[in-house]
Image (cartoon, rainbow, N blue to C red; front, top):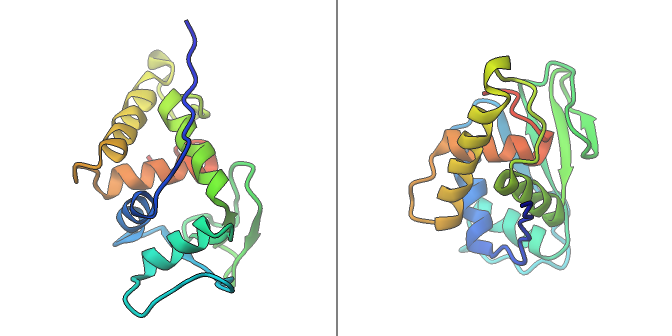
Amino acid sequence: MKTKTIITELTQEDLVNLLCTATYGSMWLSCYANDREGVNITDEDCLEDVWAKCLLAGKKVTFVDYYAEGEHYGELPYTFGKEDYECEYSVSLQDIINGLQKCADGTFSHTNYDEADNGDNEKSWIAKCFQHFKEDTGEMDNPEAESLMQIILFNELIYG
């Protein structure tokens, strides 16, 4: 039997949880939102709230991969940053939803795995990461959130 996960809604809280956990202290990932026009941002909003509000308002945010070394991965729109080694990905709310659906279903690319496991270890790791995100129990940590972001951005685990 085949099944397919359909995410019907991501809340501001869901997005803040993912974005905050993935970027806080990350060595390779950061985010910014240039287009804030028409987005209801208040003085009380933290940076991740701004990003989430922009996404929910139909705007795109930019994720910067500082470890790219002049390479890009996946199919999302990208440009190279100020430094040749940085790659910047333009990401919409639908891109995040699509990536999370791949995480839930294990339908992402499996390129960095031992031939003997056929990607099963990656699938089970990402399934665990997605479950912690979905349950919102506070168990999702930075490596898990970064892994989800790699599937969203690259459609595969690049950095393990």
